[in-house]
Every structure is written in C-alpha cells, then in structure tokens.
Length: 637
Image (tube, rainbow, N blue to C red; front, side, top):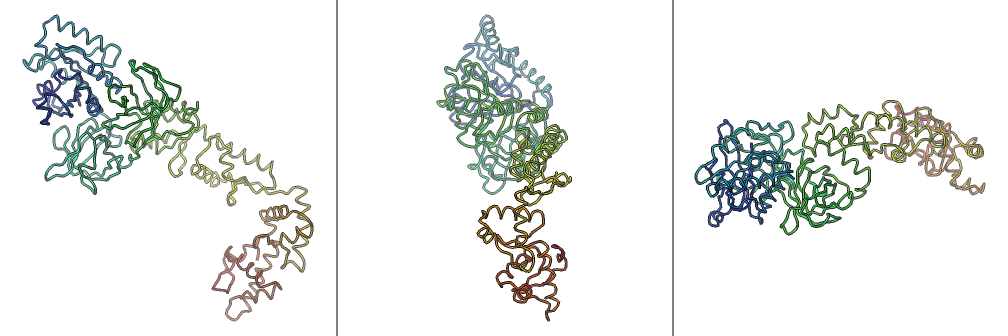
C-alpha cells in the first residue's frame, strides 16, 4: 500500500511520518535549515501486517502544490494532516480538493499536535474537519488525535493503517507496465536510477523498457520494490529501477516521464477529457482558457477547449486539452488543472481519448463517442463506442491507450468483427452485417445506373458505405469480400461477379461504325482514334470511351494510347509471331521480320511487340523476341 500525506504547511506531516516509520523524509539541507518540506520525501515501514507500506511525504506550502501533485498520483490512501492548534487551513482545503479530483476516496485524518489542544479544542477542530470532508470522497474518514512529540495516538494510527493495508486490493498486474518517474539520480557503481509508483503491470530484471515521451530505450538492471531488493516490481508498489542503455542518464530522464512497456509508447499533445471545475473558480471555463496540467508527476502548459459551451464553477463537462508539449498518458488517468500563476487549483478529471481530433470536435457524434469512451470497463467502453458513429474502433490503439495486455486485447476482439488492416479495426456484428449488405446494394445500384461501366471505383465505393472505413480498413474489407466470391476486382474498380458491361444504344451504334475499320485487310493497320474522329466529325472522347468499354468487354485490345486492335487480330498476330519464330534459324523474332508479315510500319510493329512484352506473351532479349509458351494462349493464340 502507498500512503500519501496531505495538508497545510507546518501541520506536522513529516514529523508524523517519522513517528510512524522512524525515517525522516526531509533529506535536503535546505529543508532541514528552513524546517519545511520542499521536495517529496519517502519512507517505508512494516506496520505489523507483514507487508511493507510506503509513505510519500509532500510539501504543504502553496508554492509547492506542483510537487504535492507529483507525489499524490498513484497513492492508495490519503493521510490528511490537520494541526489541532490551527485547524483547517487554505492548503488543507486545496489538498483535499485535489485528492477528491484524483479519485482518492480512502483516507484517515491525523489531528496532529494534539498535545497543544485541550478536549474542547480537539472537539472543535474535529467538527470543523468533519464539515470540511462532507461532500468529498473522504467524508466519514476517521479522525485520530496524535502527537509526534509525546507519541499519543501513534499506535492507534499505525493499527488503522495496518487494517487499511490488509483491505487494499492488489492492482491488476495483467496490464502492461507503466511507472511514473518522480526522481532520477545516479548511484556510484550502479548508474542511472529512477523511482516512482508502478501504475500498472509488472516489470522484471532484464526487461526492455521505453522512457516516454522521449522514446529512449533501456534495460532494467536491478529493482528495489518498497525499498527492498527484488527481481520483480508490480502495480501498487513504489519501485526504484536501475536502467542502462544508450542515452540513459540522470539528465535525460525527468520528473513526469513514464517508464513503460515499449508497446505503450505513443505520446500525445491533444486529449479529450472529463473536467470538473471547482466551486470557487471565479469565471466559467471558456475556449482556449490557459492552465497548467498535472498528470502523474508530469506538468505542462495546456489550453482548455470546452466541447459543450463554457463550464461554470462547480459544474462538469467535456473538454479538449491542447498541450504545450507531448506527454505519456493512458485513458482513465486522473489529472489536475491549475492556473498559470500556480496560485489556485481550477479543477480536474480523467482522460477519455488520447487521440483527440483538432476538427469537428464538438459534433453530437463526437460527444456521443466520448460518452461511450467514459465507461470505466474497457469491454463496456468498446461495446458502447461501436454503437455510435463512426461505428469503427482502432482496436490496437484502443488497447494501447488503455495499457491492456495482449490477452485482454484478444478477449475484446472476440466480441466484435475485426478487420486486419494496418492496425486491427473493430466493428460490431450488426455494423458489419450492414456494411456487407451496403457493399452489395451499392454495387448493384451502380451497375443498374451505369451498365456501360466495368465497375465502381474503390474510393468512390468506400465513401458511399456506412460505416465509413479508413482506406486501409476498406482495403481489408474489400479483400475479404473478393476472397468470399462476393466481388471481383478489375484494377481500381470493383464489380459484382455477375456484372457484364453493356453499351447504350448510342454507344452500340458508334461501335458498329468503328468495327469495319478494325477488320478486313486493314486489320493489322487500324486507324487511330484521332483519325476516325477527324474523318467522321465525332468527338475523340466518344470514340475513345466506346473503344475502352469494348476493351473491358474483351472485344478489343489497346496496344498503345488511342491505338486499338480487335481481340481476334491480337490472337492472329500471336500466331504470326510463333510462325516467324519457327522459321528463324536461332528461334528469335526481329521487329523487321514481324513487320514484314503484318505489312505494317516498323514503329507500329515495335508497339505491338512491346504490348505482348507487357503481358508476358513474348520473352525479350534486347531487340529480339520469342513466344512465352506459358502465356501464348493469353489472347487465344
């Protein structure tokens, strides 16, 4: 269990931790000379239950709330300290509000300096504390009078902490590993060491990890868990990791970095989140409101963009947080917002989407998606997200941003239809059935409206379907439909298996006029499109369109740009090449020999031979060709 102190400056937090553990959390010379806590302090003790409890001692001064926040993330229980002589003070209230926003709802109140107060004063301050806790997550917490000087109440408090530790449920260790760094230093003979609380998963000596957001990679050389040497560190423990790797130095790793499973490294600078604004905020939170974001031990500047209008004091709403620099985070992480002058806490909440869009972020569909993503359990969130537009979820990104293990991500996939694209895309079974039906219906309507077209362009078809898949997802879906025999691909076009291109009456009439030009003695020397267009005073585009339609039907072959031959002529020329090859002493055909047989110009003969080269009908050796026996019948030759 990790216990975090909270409370006003000079209310005895450090002295209380020393009385409970025998360890002085103030380690800096400045702290000892000034008599105040400036940095986070850490202590460990066996409270009698056989386990090791970790204590994070935080500063109480208003100037060091950012340091308090760095230590408050990841604690299991809050030890709120209120001095009997002072009572509830401003930082008591701010720290309490922060704990509430962070979702810390287990706690004990230590009424310190009890030796300075008589029974009446103790009762008065206790009533004040109870009133202050009302309406917060710590409402009803036990209030224990203690004195670090005389020892009064210390044993009682220690016993209550031991009971709380026994009641602390183990955090899930089947998630991927994340540790929030609150200190980085160098030990002689060991190298770089980072400390922090393991937020999820487990880490073992020898594991490879990534420091995010920098992306530095490292190997874990040694572990101390709860201040004891260990081979493994697990979620809920404070750990010190001895890291080794290129670029791994004390200066390269900062407070707020996250040491994590390499699969989770995906920094973000734009996040959609829930925000609860504290009741004392003087103005509503409006678009582009500046603030300081605190999450884990990280701190950075941020702009707040409410997604449903300004958020008044005491109210809750959806917001987008646009950060000054990327951070490592996870969906569900709790965060705090403070004003840019660091004088007050504005509010806080939890992250819902780490890949927030910069545009169309306030549409009803987007807000419905965020409502769905707010479900606390991943399976429930995924199911809800699949029911609202766009009805498609990047399953790999969903699992990564929630820190899910491969096994947990696999279990989620069992409840959906998954398309194996660049990343796995999940659809509900109902959405997939609708997509399959829409695919067939859209192609059928297209064939009915445009019978002369070989098929529908892939991109046009993608944009016509609902749900609209991303390009790689549609490619995977179309490939599955083709493999199932439900569609046929022809280049960039898709068609239904039974579709045959049909010309209109006008196109048929124009093709009937073209056909004599491609037959008879002139079949090896047909006119080009522009020649026919000029002679007949018909637009080139019409003749070209009809000939290309005929090519898609297999009636003609386009040898070169605007130069078409009947399919029968193409097959005849394959046989001519075979005859020339058989008569050649070395079995190779020259362009000149072929030209003489078809009585055409050398340039056209070369164009024809190049056409066969492109289709693999002929094999080439310099300027010579011969028939490829494996493809000779491609055009009926």
